[in-house]
Length: 452
Image 1 (cartoon, rainbow, N blue to C red):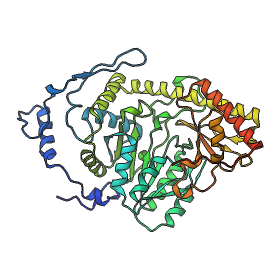
Image 2 (tube, one colour):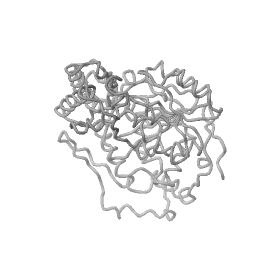
Image 3 (cartoon, rainbow, N blue to C red):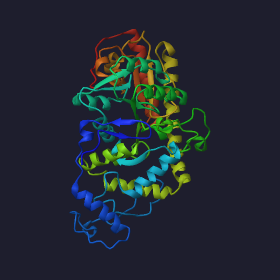
Image 4 (cartoon, one colour):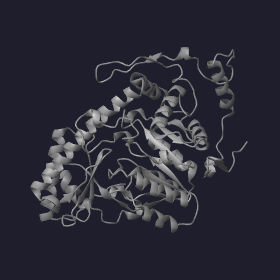
């Protein structure tokens, strides 16, 4: 039976694309999956339906991880993760992730499904909620992946002005008021924003949410840096937020009252990017279609990756264990952030101070957003050749602009403290400051074009 044109949530009707309204549900899965669930529950059922190899054919029986602290996780049985299963993920993992989401974001009318990381989940969300020719609203500076996904699929990214606190509500409303009225998607990286590092206050997010309600907008909350929140003032690991919702940034999901938020989370920043594992929190009407789209594309996230994540969660066991693991990660990111901030500020002070560049200290994420003084270079792309030649790599801010803004001057540089050693950060800061000082005395307009 074809799905309805619109699927109701609590007080809002999500409008799905042609693809979303015409997903083909496998008739084999319709028989096989319920029968397997009944058998797993203990019923006497002979499974002669799906072409699922018996688990005895799987070479691997269990998975245990050797951790960096020298301990090893308890083995996770691989029979279910390595078998065909629902596109929403292995239930043991999916339910654990939903419990985390409920603890952190509250008890709204939404559910959770596993994804193949935020990138794949983002693409699927765009395919389910937008059509060719649609405008997708984004932050003035945003992750280039959204541009890479929208442009070849004939969606247009519309940039909304930002200030130090994130998207400017008045600019969002003015942008929406100027567009023909229809359901639209606003894509936002809501904590430790990439590239700016900013985290909007709860009050700012409430303003943005109210405007989205007024103009029939779906908020696509991409938040891979959420659990990398870290205070500006702290003494030890104990001061880190862990997974305490009172100490973490307010999310759009937590304030959603009518089912207009689709939230993407990821294991990439708190476990490892190579797992390619994430989770989507959204109204059930959306998750139903997302699950079918998974099953007709990737089938489901990697069973081995799900088993590895489950092994970690089982090792952390409870909220206290998960919190402790997060606090350790957050503390190290805070320490790294402080090393780079101090190194850049110190090097700039020696070379010329605020006459060269300025920066703010981020409260989440991986990035510093350095504003180069116009007296040095109105557009940071002019510096790239010299920066590379002088032994420091950072990303010009224009790389994060939408295609229609690529020709505009952009004074920013994005730096990261995620992977360099302390010595490398200090050396890079010195080289950066020296390059800015030298360029301010001997300007050159040779650009190194960056592919967004």
